[in-house]
Length: 163
Length: 469
Image 1: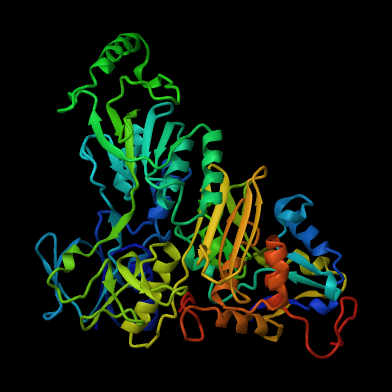
Image 2: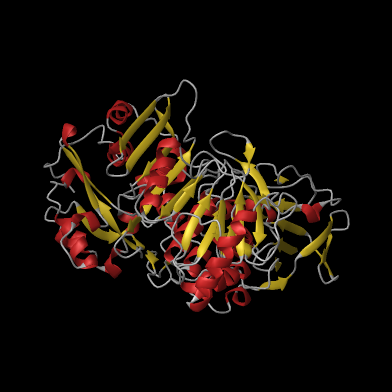
């Protein structure tokens, strides 16, 4: 069974340890601006929302890539291949969730790849706001439902869904 | 069932793969217009600057991909279509019959009415073959004139600059990328480029491109220019002619093979002229085929054309523009893929209407990144929010219809930029976030997450309250 990040904003305290862990594991530095997960702070509502790629079925980024540099691995994860990425940034505008970002220091794009199956953000989260568990039991449905609404076609899987 | 796809760009390849997924037993033939494996034009600038080899431009990177999918890859191009006989003729005279056909023949560069476009050293930058020619000429330090600073022109601009040429860009419009960015953003790009040593001539028209050996025609009043030409040739003769670092200002004479004459009288020396003056759909071969065309091939929401069994996708098709609801040509990669996917489903009998594609572009101009989405120019009666920081080269402009975002453009902003597409395409009502964005347009990511992930309406809320499992 595929596993996915389950994010429960209600449990997030905004400590940003997920961002630190992500940037350290993936970029080798404690630099939250290079984190692939981001915690949004809605201070008016006293609410924090961790946010990252949902590895969506539509895979807008993958479909938009002109050089096949983003592929889906056996765990359903959309992975950027640095050796193929030319840095054209089309995926960064194609992803309607805004979770693929350009890294100017490498000239490539970065996105969450679940750290190869052991996501550092989930390990670092002290309150279980981010957990890594079976996709079908996760609170992913809301995101997926929303993703469906944004598709350009009328069929439930969207125009860019790997058929 | 024989599915024949004309054109091996993103639309054609996506369609072929999608048909295979839904019709495991169908026969699929993909006919290319060029003697290359299916590749991406978008990757050509990165090939020019040496970031990748030719293989890196290929649309699919796995060896034997098309064979594995049972897709027959064949060289065209197609010269004639007979929709009554469901047959088409290839350039070599052979014929192919089809049950369903997809026209995904893309576009070709427009050749503006400029004298001397056929001179050696004048190239478009569209195909791998063009790229091979450009690489030969674009040596460090040589003067290069780029005609056109539209979206494609600006991508080529970046590549030429990285190749180290002495670059002048000539744009007919009043600013750079006039169809993607407004004046504020376009001028930011211009100043940025000029700071990096690129000469930018806007509002400029090219009159002629003359070979330097060629005597100037009828109005031969260029006599005074001839003498220093000889002198510089004499001086240049002893040194290395390729390495003469021409100053940005155009000398009236030079020892480079081409001279670009502008309408205002300026003369620009050039070892290479690259033409990027827009593209037009490849529809000539459809004359008399029974397929209705305008600027491109007319399609219905199912991407079917007026001829039975024939569909169209990508740059060649006039698909629905999500922003306007009208049929329009949006010649961009993500739209080509969407079209190819939708058309393929319909070709397989899975009825799927296209809701429309969103126009969007992202551009990296010598490190300054800009993007635009949807109706970036706004609508009458809609609200507009802008944030300009000229010092920092940052700019955001948002356009609203009521409390919905309908268009946006950014300079110097890349973080979570796709959310702009998300907000525009999903027609989400921003509610209270609209006013916050009017005040601070930079809060777009917060607005997006705030709207999409609203707090639960019932049950426990608040950050420090752990929900019972």
